[in-house]
Length: 226
Image (cartoon, rainbow, N blue to C red):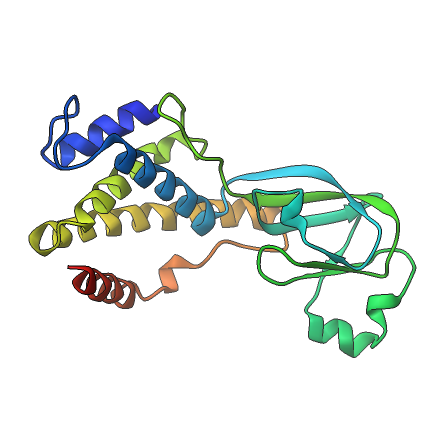
Protein backbone atom coordinates (compact mmCIF):
# COMPACT_ATOMS: atom_id res chain seq x y z
CA UNK A 1 0.00 0.00 0.00
CA UNK A 2 1.18 3.53 -0.74
CA UNK A 3 0.85 6.42 1.68
CA UNK A 4 -1.90 7.85 -0.54
CA UNK A 5 -3.89 4.61 -0.29
CA UNK A 6 -3.43 4.45 3.48
CA UNK A 7 -4.48 8.10 3.82
CA UNK A 8 -7.62 7.48 1.77
CA UNK A 9 -8.58 4.51 3.94
CA UNK A 10 -7.97 6.46 7.16
CA UNK A 11 -10.17 9.35 6.06
CA UNK A 12 -12.90 6.99 4.87
CA UNK A 13 -12.82 5.11 8.19
CA UNK A 14 -13.40 8.33 10.14
CA UNK A 15 -16.50 8.99 8.00
CA UNK A 16 -15.06 11.80 5.94
CA UNK A 17 -14.55 12.39 2.24
CA UNK A 18 -11.06 11.26 1.14
CA UNK A 19 -11.12 13.74 -1.75
CA UNK A 20 -12.11 16.84 0.23
CA UNK A 21 -11.91 15.96 3.95
CA UNK A 22 -13.35 18.43 6.46
CA UNK A 23 -12.53 17.02 9.89
CA UNK A 24 -8.87 16.36 9.20
CA UNK A 25 -6.14 17.72 6.95
CA UNK A 26 -3.86 15.76 4.64
CA UNK A 27 -0.90 16.89 6.76
CA UNK A 28 -2.52 15.49 9.92
CA UNK A 29 -3.13 12.11 8.30
CA UNK A 30 0.41 11.97 6.92
CA UNK A 31 1.81 12.81 10.35
CA UNK A 32 -0.28 10.03 11.90
CA UNK A 33 0.97 7.50 9.35
CA UNK A 34 4.57 8.50 9.98
CA UNK A 35 4.06 8.27 13.72
CA UNK A 36 2.51 4.82 13.33
CA UNK A 37 5.41 3.54 11.25
CA UNK A 38 7.98 4.96 13.69
CA UNK A 39 6.17 3.33 16.61
CA UNK A 40 6.00 0.04 14.72
CA UNK A 41 9.75 0.14 14.14
CA UNK A 42 10.42 0.95 17.80
CA UNK A 43 8.11 -1.70 19.26
CA UNK A 44 9.08 -4.53 16.92
CA UNK A 45 12.66 -3.65 15.86
CA UNK A 46 11.63 -5.06 12.49
CA UNK A 47 13.92 -2.77 10.46
CA UNK A 48 17.64 -3.43 10.50
CA UNK A 49 20.73 -2.54 8.52
CA UNK A 50 24.48 -3.20 8.65
CA UNK A 51 27.07 -0.47 8.09
CA UNK A 52 30.76 0.21 8.68
CA UNK A 53 31.44 2.27 11.80
CA UNK A 54 34.92 3.70 12.56
CA UNK A 55 36.29 3.17 16.07
CA UNK A 56 39.10 5.33 17.43
CA UNK A 57 38.32 5.99 21.08
CA UNK A 58 36.00 5.12 23.96
CA UNK A 59 32.82 7.21 23.68
CA UNK A 60 30.62 7.85 20.64
CA UNK A 61 27.44 9.81 19.94
CA UNK A 62 26.49 7.39 17.17
CA UNK A 63 23.40 9.26 15.97
CA UNK A 64 25.65 12.04 14.67
CA UNK A 65 26.45 9.70 11.77
CA UNK A 66 23.81 6.97 12.16
CA UNK A 67 20.87 9.35 12.33
CA UNK A 68 18.27 6.57 12.25
CA UNK A 69 19.87 4.46 15.01
CA UNK A 70 17.60 2.83 17.62
CA UNK A 71 19.50 -0.04 19.27
CA UNK A 72 22.58 -2.13 18.44
CA UNK A 73 21.91 -5.71 17.37
CA UNK A 74 25.46 -6.90 16.74
CA UNK A 75 28.90 -5.25 16.58
CA UNK A 76 31.89 -7.07 15.13
CA UNK A 77 35.54 -6.21 14.57
CA UNK A 78 37.44 -8.36 12.06
CA UNK A 79 34.62 -10.88 12.27
CA UNK A 80 34.81 -11.15 16.09
CA UNK A 81 31.73 -10.09 18.05
CA UNK A 82 31.96 -7.47 20.76
CA UNK A 83 30.10 -8.51 23.89
CA UNK A 84 27.37 -6.21 25.26
CA UNK A 85 27.93 -5.03 28.83
CA UNK A 86 26.68 -2.48 31.32
CA UNK A 87 28.79 0.39 32.62
CA UNK A 88 28.71 -1.22 36.07
CA UNK A 89 30.15 -4.44 34.63
CA UNK A 90 32.90 -2.57 32.83
CA UNK A 91 33.78 -0.64 36.02
CA UNK A 92 33.90 -3.89 37.99
CA UNK A 93 36.16 -5.64 35.48
CA UNK A 94 38.57 -2.75 34.96
CA UNK A 95 38.25 0.67 36.66
CA UNK A 96 40.48 2.12 33.93
CA UNK A 97 38.46 0.69 31.04
CA UNK A 98 37.81 4.14 29.57
CA UNK A 99 41.53 4.61 28.96
CA UNK A 100 42.63 1.07 28.10
CA UNK A 101 44.12 0.44 24.67
CA UNK A 102 43.95 -2.96 22.98
CA UNK A 103 41.67 -5.10 20.85
CA UNK A 104 38.03 -3.98 21.13
CA UNK A 105 36.07 -6.64 23.03
CA UNK A 106 33.05 -5.08 24.79
CA UNK A 107 30.55 -2.30 24.31
CA UNK A 108 27.85 -0.57 26.31
CA UNK A 109 25.06 1.80 25.33
CA UNK A 110 23.01 4.41 27.16
CA UNK A 111 19.83 5.42 25.38
CA UNK A 112 19.92 5.87 21.62
CA UNK A 113 22.93 8.16 21.38
CA UNK A 114 25.75 7.08 23.65
CA UNK A 115 28.07 4.17 22.92
CA UNK A 116 31.19 3.08 24.76
CA UNK A 117 33.74 0.59 23.42
CA UNK A 118 36.62 -0.99 25.36
CA UNK A 119 39.52 -1.58 24.98
CA UNK A 120 40.16 1.31 22.60
CA UNK A 121 41.29 0.43 19.09
CA UNK A 122 41.52 2.33 15.82
CA UNK A 123 39.64 0.08 13.45
CA UNK A 124 36.45 -0.18 11.38
CA UNK A 125 33.65 -2.17 12.99
CA UNK A 126 30.63 -3.78 11.34
CA UNK A 127 27.57 -2.38 13.02
CA UNK A 128 24.17 -4.09 12.71
CA UNK A 129 21.39 -2.07 14.27
CA UNK A 130 17.63 -1.58 14.35
CA UNK A 131 16.68 1.68 12.70
CA UNK A 132 13.88 4.19 12.60
CA UNK A 133 12.39 4.82 9.13
CA UNK A 134 12.69 8.13 7.32
CA UNK A 135 9.65 10.38 7.13
CA UNK A 136 7.20 9.29 4.45
CA UNK A 137 5.86 11.57 1.75
CA UNK A 138 2.52 11.27 -0.02
CA UNK A 139 3.83 9.14 -2.89
CA UNK A 140 5.98 6.80 -0.79
CA UNK A 141 5.43 3.21 0.32
CA UNK A 142 6.01 2.37 4.02
CA UNK A 143 9.15 0.32 4.68
CA UNK A 144 7.68 -1.87 7.40
CA UNK A 145 6.48 -5.30 6.12
CA UNK A 146 3.67 -5.02 3.58
CA UNK A 147 1.49 -7.30 5.73
CA UNK A 148 1.54 -4.57 8.39
CA UNK A 149 0.56 -1.67 6.15
CA UNK A 150 -3.12 -2.04 7.19
CA UNK A 151 -1.95 -1.50 10.77
CA UNK A 152 -0.95 2.03 9.77
CA UNK A 153 -4.59 2.55 8.81
CA UNK A 154 -5.62 1.45 12.32
CA UNK A 155 -3.10 3.79 13.92
CA UNK A 156 -4.08 6.63 11.62
CA UNK A 157 -7.77 6.22 12.54
CA UNK A 158 -6.87 6.19 16.24
CA UNK A 159 -4.68 9.29 15.94
CA UNK A 160 -7.19 11.28 13.88
CA UNK A 161 -10.02 10.45 16.31
CA UNK A 162 -7.93 11.30 19.35
CA UNK A 163 -8.64 15.03 19.12
CA UNK A 164 -12.43 14.51 19.04
CA UNK A 165 -12.75 12.99 22.51
CA UNK A 166 -15.80 11.27 23.99
CA UNK A 167 -17.22 8.42 21.87
CA UNK A 168 -14.78 8.95 19.01
CA UNK A 169 -11.86 8.68 21.43
CA UNK A 170 -13.25 5.42 22.82
CA UNK A 171 -13.66 4.04 19.29
CA UNK A 172 -10.16 5.17 18.41
CA UNK A 173 -8.69 3.32 21.38
CA UNK A 174 -10.13 0.16 19.87
CA UNK A 175 -8.11 0.86 16.72
CA UNK A 176 -5.04 1.49 18.87
CA UNK A 177 -5.46 -1.88 20.57
CA UNK A 178 -5.77 -3.55 17.16
CA UNK A 179 -2.51 -1.85 16.16
CA UNK A 180 -0.77 -3.07 19.32
CA UNK A 181 -2.05 -6.62 18.76
CA UNK A 182 -0.38 -6.62 15.35
CA UNK A 183 2.81 -5.12 16.75
CA UNK A 184 2.92 -7.91 19.31
CA UNK A 185 2.79 -10.49 16.50
CA UNK A 186 5.39 -8.61 14.46
CA UNK A 187 7.63 -8.33 17.53
CA UNK A 188 7.27 -12.07 18.19
CA UNK A 189 8.33 -12.79 14.61
CA UNK A 190 11.29 -10.41 14.88
CA UNK A 191 12.27 -11.93 18.23
CA UNK A 192 12.38 -15.44 16.76
CA UNK A 193 14.51 -14.20 13.87
CA UNK A 194 16.79 -12.24 16.24
CA UNK A 195 17.29 -15.22 18.54
CA UNK A 196 18.28 -17.33 15.55
CA UNK A 197 20.81 -14.65 14.55
CA UNK A 198 21.96 -14.32 18.21
CA UNK A 199 21.38 -10.58 18.25
CA UNK A 200 22.13 -8.65 21.44
CA UNK A 201 18.75 -6.90 21.78
CA UNK A 202 15.23 -8.28 21.44
CA UNK A 203 11.94 -6.41 20.86
CA UNK A 204 9.74 -5.33 23.74
CA UNK A 205 7.56 -8.12 25.16
CA UNK A 206 4.21 -6.48 24.43
CA UNK A 207 2.40 -9.54 25.78
CA UNK A 208 3.70 -8.57 29.23
CA UNK A 209 2.83 -4.89 28.87
CA UNK A 210 -0.11 -3.53 30.89
CA UNK A 211 -2.07 -1.64 28.25
CA UNK A 212 -4.76 -0.51 30.70
CA UNK A 213 -2.33 1.96 32.27
CA UNK A 214 -1.40 3.33 28.86
CA UNK A 215 -5.05 3.75 27.87
CA UNK A 216 -5.78 5.50 31.18
CA UNK A 217 -2.92 7.91 30.58
CA UNK A 218 -4.16 8.66 27.06
CA UNK A 219 -7.65 9.44 28.37
CA UNK A 220 -6.31 11.63 31.19
CA UNK A 221 -4.01 13.56 28.85
CA UNK A 222 -6.75 14.12 26.31
CA UNK A 223 -9.14 15.29 29.05
CA UNK A 224 -6.62 17.97 30.05
CA UNK A 225 -6.43 19.17 26.47
CA UNK A 226 -10.21 19.34 26.07
